[in-house]
Image (cartoon, rainbow, N blue to C red; front, side, top):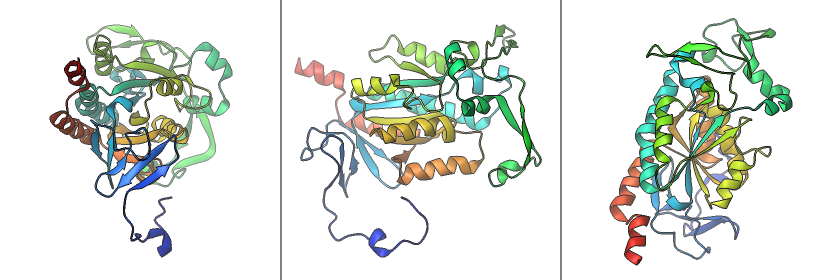
Length: 332
């Protein structure tokens, strides 16, 4: 499964026969060819050619073919809680990922009529009553730092082993009034409670979502109350994907090693195609956490690509194929 250790030759050396190969089962399969890489268009039978028109998305290691009509772009947790400067946020990696998603991923998805799905953290009062202790700890406790360079050390090093402390504002508690750049004061609401100001999409993204509501394929939004938006306790997103035959999922958002990875892994385990767009994903964890997720997406959980590669694939797609709208009009 992607080990970097020395492997026996029978596991690593290429076989002589490199002809077309079907992976999977009759209901869920990919088709591999040396020329095109992996066909993820999900044609009707294992003998069928790839669905056309399709995108050819270059990933690390291999290209893949995807059907835009069966593809969704998931944007996870890009909300005020982690991004708005009025709350003291200043993580450059987060803002860089947000900019990339706005510049490349969203325009490309809209152009190819790929469904955009926003997934954000938001709790109800009932959720708080049923919250498991491990989830509560994540938002309400912090470790005691002993080394300011702990992020460069191995996990756990640089912290005290003498206990954690409760932070000032835990999940469900009132943040209070905050001042925006304009001078306006807003009620930030309770920490990560649904529909509170801090739980809303960050301003540039909220604008994009709002604009989509008057388009042919409006964006959709789902709240989650766990790190994964596709775990067994939350079926709404999974049911939406299955109902709309969305089989291939492109992942962006924050934190890469937490909510993005959690949702991606559950999608992978449920049989969806999963692709991490690494330049549209970021974390405030140490660099090795991001690298670990990228490595496993590279080899085990699906594929690793970028928002820029998605934009390039859509450019080529539009240049070489008619849009679905044009095809419908021509057939009429």
